Length: 373
Image 1 (cartoon, rainbow, N blue to C red):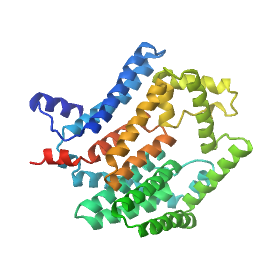
Image 2 (cartoon, rainbow, N blue to C red):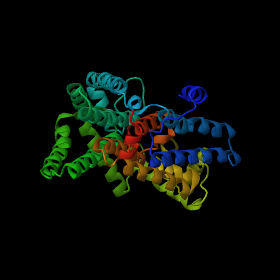
Image 3 (cartoon, rainbow, N blue to C red):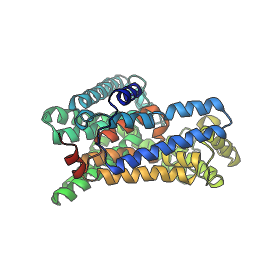
Image 4 (tube, helix red, strand yellow):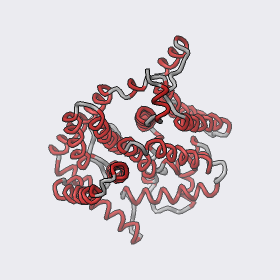
């Protein structure tokens, strides 16, 4: 992508005017984020860690710029996203078959806060997010393109496998985005009877999944066990959700001490581990996880300005995508995921977020008119 951007700038020298003002503001906020990372070099205690952080975050500015240089019909080219969705579905099918072949063993692991193994060894939380993204891509192209049967079949298959493979983060993001999609669709169409049908469907889907999917059922049981551990003060070690709550508390304690400037992204791990010790956490050292929340992660690194930066991006995304329910649902998947996982602390998350959102943010009517051939 970087090579293409450099070649385009040298050879073509003109940029297609296909982005509206608020999209450029989002890109500006991402540039500010990179600026924070660069400034971290002056206060880091570990130069190698800072270099790794800088390398990790480079796609935040390269990928959107790459999308900006593509024509609008190119970045939404159906065949490209069909290949992306087909590959995701293929990985999901292989992983589901593997689950069925090792049914009892994997179900036992799920009750211990483990996950269904994903073919290709992709992180299970990120794969759940990608599956949710692909479902809304299916909805988008089903509504706007001709291959309706293909997109419908892929969407149904992905929803089915999501309840077998996805982590709780992926499932929560999907159901929350489905609620957002339903509300936006009803608001646009004014067909209020759809509200009742949609709500009934959303209530029946998890109930049906609980009855039919051993994987989904064990995730629910494990989650209830985690909730009870947090509520009753029982041992929370090796309980994924309970450990995450402890990590949030610890992160907030670090933020309270560094509310204005943060500790620097390359110092987050060191500071949070130190805070675990100060708080006399009951977690074993191996269970003392990071923030698992992108908003907390940025606030830890850069203070309130960092947290407000991400909040600003989220608000602008909602504002830009509200005219298209399917794209709004895509934005909702990422925003909800940010609350449950540090999605943009892996390049898997950064690449999917930037490529999808900057490709599908709807253009304003004025921009559409300006860019017509």
